[in-house]
Image 1 (cartoon, rainbow, N blue to C red):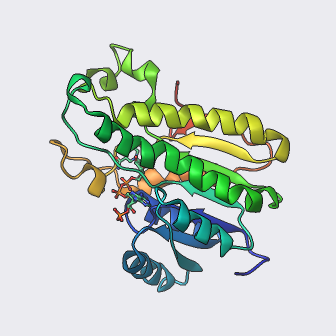
Image 2 (image 1 turned 90 degrees about the vertical axis):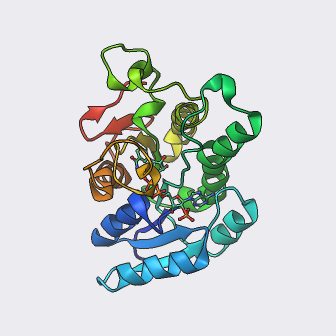
Length: 243
Ligand SMILES: NC(=O)c1ccc[n+]([C@@H]2O[C@H](COP(=O)([O-])OP(=O)(O)OC[C@H]3O[C@@H](n4cnc5c(N)ncnc54)[C@H](OP(=O)(O)O)[C@@H]3O)[C@@H](O)[C@H]2O)c1
């Protein structure tokens, strides 16, 4: 690890939006730790980025497995940027009344509790950074305002007890971390990448033209905020997303 280089960790970065965030942060001169729960997938993705000249290193990290998170934290000497990107959609289809607790728990475990586990493990390192940034990758479907605005397309999506509430909870967690960490100069924000064509969305019954790189742009922007940047906010390409 190069102590002099700004260092970023992106969880779930072996593919999709996280991979593009890793590529974008490396292109800005950062050393990037490419988090992957699967060692081989992480190494393959890191090799692809290194072939472009990027300083990218794979790191095994399953956000639902505290042992891998602690091992990852213990292997680092510097961390300036944490992007909590790893996420799962859970099953698409069942209405809240048909959702069992096990299914709900699995989505919350990755999308919310995983963020808590990783963030708390990385905080001692982040606190030593001169300008730490945390970006939680949320979603527009985490916005209660959108779900209750008849004019917004999100209000017309089928009801779901799992993924949207997990991102609403993640937004709330973002605000609480921002409150706590403001005194340490750590800026914490949530990003809505917008619907992007990744494995995450491949089973949806409509075509998505926005790319993973398009979705990564707002995350990269929040990961590279200057000292006067916002904290405790929720942003997409167009600006502030209503809670
Ligand atoms: N795509 C969209 O339209 C969209 C829109 C709004 C928000 N988002 C959010 O953007 C983030 C990335 O989504 P994506 O579209 O890039 O999805 P993706 O292509 O399915 O990638 C998800 C990544 O998360 C990893 N992951 C899942 N569970 C994990 C765990 N327990 N520990 C560590 N890594 C784990 C996956 O690893 P494996 O390869 O091992 O499965 C993969 O690397 C998610 O938080 C998602 O909610 C996506």
